[in-house]
Image 1 (tube, rainbow, N blue to C red):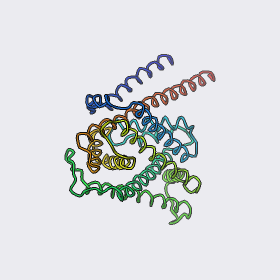
Image 2 (cartoon, one colour):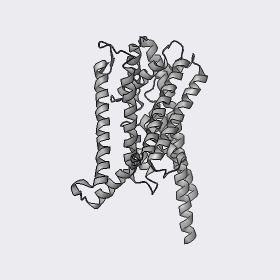
Image 3 (cartoon, rainbow, N blue to C red):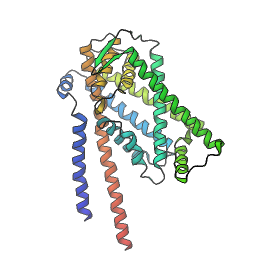
Image 4 (cartoon, rainbow, N blue to C red):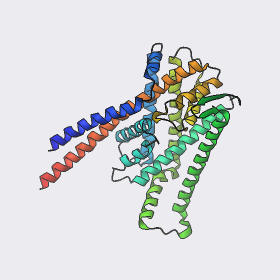
Length: 339
């Protein structure tokens, strides 16, 4: 019976894998991407992909630190990659919820603790994005009359700053929540007496952010966050260098990446296909690059940045499924042995 179950899950895994691939690429103009593959430096593309995977490995290191290293690094990495893969193919950034659910299979990590660590990650990512943006706009001027139409949206300087303001507000709210939790936990203000379930949930949320009270840990998380985003810029820059006809420097490549990161907050299809390219075209128009050249580059760059994440995510999902089924099989054998 266990034998048949094992093969059933393998077949089911294949079905899910092909389903994931279809969801990921159903909105992608593959012919346009393939035509852009002709005149690129594949050595530099390989370096870009390697840097992208390295940045995700460092994300796993950062997450493991926030989780008090209760989970092994390789499993943390696989769960993180699975989550980001789901972000690429399912609307609503479902991977941000899937990650805590998967990691909470570990009996030492509660769901609320895992959720709070993801919130901390997002706070540090937002701070890095906003910091890079405010530094870059001192050197790169965005014309007030520049615009680019995407669906029902008109991408412009005003819309960009609206999204930046929204992101800054979210960062401030998250930061205030952290301070509130720190203060409640330390001072026990208000004599707060909650129902037992709420008290347990609150205590687990506190566990997820308690690491930040340690100055050394806080420095490590901050440094890792900076390196993660710096590597992501490097990945963009190597794609720029690999493509003929696109001549921008490192700082300008950083500008393009940051603008895309803000504009993909616009509701769109899974994987951000369309809005990613629109944000990139707007950013490159600021730099004086023709829209037709910018469109081709951003479509190709989008594929280079996303396909490795999807592929690694599917591999990671297989790994997690295999380990989970193996664990169930071993527990079943143990039960039978005891009987």
